[in-house]
Amino acid sequence: MSLQNNIQAIIPVQCRSLHKSYKKIQALQDISFEVNPGELFGIIGPDGAGKTTLFRILTTLLLPASGSATVDGYDVVKDYKEIRKRVGYMPGRFSLYQDLSVEENLTFFASVFNTTIEENYDLIKDIYCQIEPFKKRRAGALSGGMKQKLALSCALIHRPSVLFLDEPTTGVDPVSRKEFWEILKKLKQEGITILVSTPYMDEASLCDRIALINNGKILKIDTPENITSQFGKILWTVQSRNMHTLLIDLREHPAIGSCFAFGDTHHVTITNEQLKMDDLKAYLEGKGHADIAIRPAGATIEDCFMDLLK
Amino acid sequence: MTKNIITPDSNRQSSIVNCQLDSVIQVDNLVKRFGHFTAVDHITFDVKQGEIFGFLGANGAGKTTAMRMLCGLSKPTEGHGRVAGFDIDREVEKVKASIGYMSQKFSLYNDLKVWENIRLFAGIYGMRDKEIAQKTDALLQRLNFTSERNTLVKELPLGWKQKLAFSVSIFHQPKVVFLDEPTGGVDPVTRRQFWELIYEATSEGITVFVTTHYMDEAEYCNRVSIMVDGQVKALDTPGNLKRQFEADTMDSVFHRLARNATRSDN
Image (tube, rainbow over all chains, first blue to last red; front, side, top):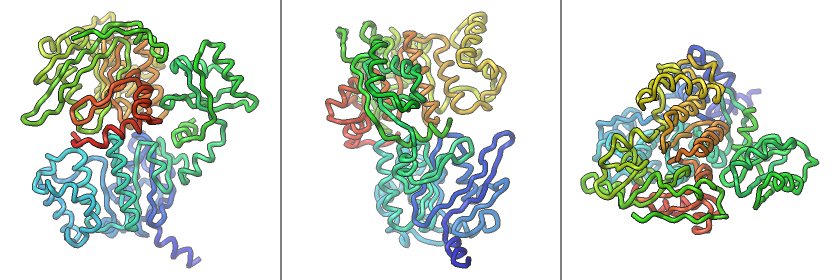
């Protein structure tokens, strides 16, 4: 029992049945999960799912209606001062001082946490060196990507034990998103536990474990691999020359459960195991489709998320 | 400007593109400079009626500046452009009256009811009260929204808001609608329903000009252009682009083109 307590004491993030509501809207309902030391944990869901509310509670900026949570073993309500010393938080909206220069912002955040840029420079070096040429520029005059890098540098300058990143890649193009995830991988190697939220389902596979969240409720928590391998339905990709009518015709087939567009193919789930690919092909030919291609497929996180929404 | 002659192309899905010869958007060597900075650097392309045209590019590539010129909100420094038959430099008000616009950032007024938003935008576009009333009923029925007629927009779930915003942007039946990252942050099911609304609109002859950061959505476009550092570096059907760049997905096409960008961000 005491051993268990010891282990629990070092769990970086732990939520037990968190609830929060704003007037009529239930922002968070019965949220429970744990993040392990050194883990890159993703909170994945659309806008309005409750991601930001959850982050604000964990960073002690908002009180839960009920339930409890600890960060580094400290209670988010009682021990808020201790938590604020230990965590780094990068909100979704840029919230540095626009009228201070790049360097002044970083110096300010370092001094608030009783440290200096020099002391933890090795941690932020790879990120900060990209904006250092512009260190005299006002933060408000930076481009979007540079603001993001400055915000991350400021969130890291006191070497936090847990880093909270709320939608760091929203609205960012695919190339810059990839670069940002490379940065996160490096930070993870430094032993920092990272909790990151995103509405992009394709980023799920870059996390160690993920929680899928929608309408204030967690739909599933596991590794991305386990979630996709537990999809549990026959999934095929289907293509033909006219993808729009194909969607409509596939949905009319009695043995097809769901049918969604996925880039250049449609993903269909088969509810009747007796259905053969040749049967479906013959059905589609009868509907006038040409160049039909049907292949078995593995589920993606997006397939799983949509299945869980039902 | 030479007019492209389109021959029936049996390889491609879009029968609409092939049977319509009209260009709804014509852009010829369009340039926009801010001081010494060339945000848009001699771009040239045509968009046909009923086409879904994907306008991709990294942050800072110049997409927003180009789109603002096409919507009549920013004057070109050089070059020419016509949207819905009107010159984007000299017939700005006619351009504005012929287009629809929707973005994720701004779409509807939160403090107005559903019907009030429709009434407001339709009124701005000069529609008559009787027509507005009739079409409002039809629209709300089609979207299964009739029960929400008197709901404040801020109380609608995000996905509903986006679908309503799109429907409002094409309510006055513009020739072309500009969609600026319309599906950002929306759940995957709603995102797909949104694209089905786009398909419906094109089947009514509306041309769709859309930007997105979701590369799977690039596949839903008839043609896609990719901007890098102010220039259009690639423009073709998704299938042809993938063949050209020997890539399996539009995501890898995008990475190949955009990773060498020297500019970043807006």
